[in-house]
Length: 269
Image (cartoon, rainbow, N blue to C red):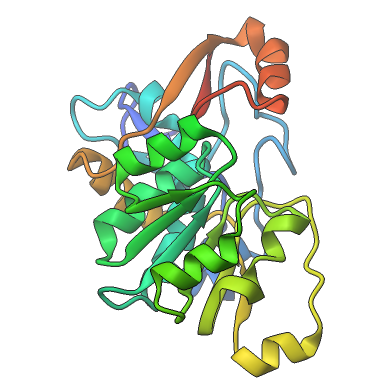
């Protein structure tokens, strides 16, 4: 730490917001960290992702509460904050008794289920191909967990008395999952696209008729990471992790690609 750093001191445990922001551009002044006009993203736009040390700036660090293991909470700096950001937008549109559908209960989705449960009184319905993931969803607060190879439209229709899901959080983002939106969304509902890799193929008329919307999710704000840390400190969110040495990173990447890791993998130097 340099002599002008005042937020933290050397040796203090912190979690880092994923990006470095300038703090002076218009988006930064509005609190929109991810829209910073001078943003630097270690591991993407700048070197420093998979390494023993990470260079960042004072604006990006958040001191951790006593007793919190940095390795345990580390995935919240990316996966956690992204899930929380999507859920926070969804919760603003949810009333008690509404239905929220979570698609994919993996590394991000299992955090999303817990955030939804902690922040709303909605009925949570989880979709995942794996029975183990569906069991995890129930354990973490989902009222129902469905196999997406079944007739999801009919099942959501039955669970909501024909109303549909007020909010959909899609942590997969494949063609098959984005296509579910118009089939299961309530009138005026939102389909939050968090995972990506697929496409949205819907006629404009589909969006007009039901006034549904697809909404993107780009990580989250610094203040939202603070809020998520508060949920973790209160034991409202439990992150499922497994640890690996930096030398194992290629093997971990392969396991991740094949879906063999539950929750999030943490690489320690």
